[in-house]
Length: 175
Image (cartoon, rainbow, N blue to C red; front, side, top):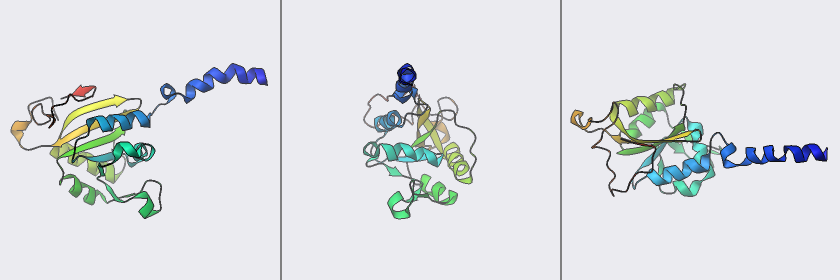
């Protein structure tokens, strides 16, 4: 029995390391902290990706959860309560930049809430940057101003997405 334990110990240790995780919420939280700016909001697609903020709340201090209408303490739930698709869409249209936390291999939206989030992003925002790391994706969107702003690849804008403080974005793809 002890021999079996010792033989499997390296396997167990590798599974417990950060490299062994399919979705590394700590790394995701660090990426959010690196790309966010003052006044940004965060949106989770799907809502289950809110686990990133629950595990690393310090990285999300000062960034408003756009879809949340009642927090975990207020609602008596682990994740809080999101607003209706209409409430979330309305809130999205009132902001300039959104940091989206999603899955790296994001499947099609399966709920009305997620479909509404994606519809508003596609219709009213341009993708500025995207970071994929260990199963999670961080995408920064900025509000589209006019048709002339759309000078980058489809769904992006090279000019609209410049950072206010001109720091280089730590992302795998900058538009």
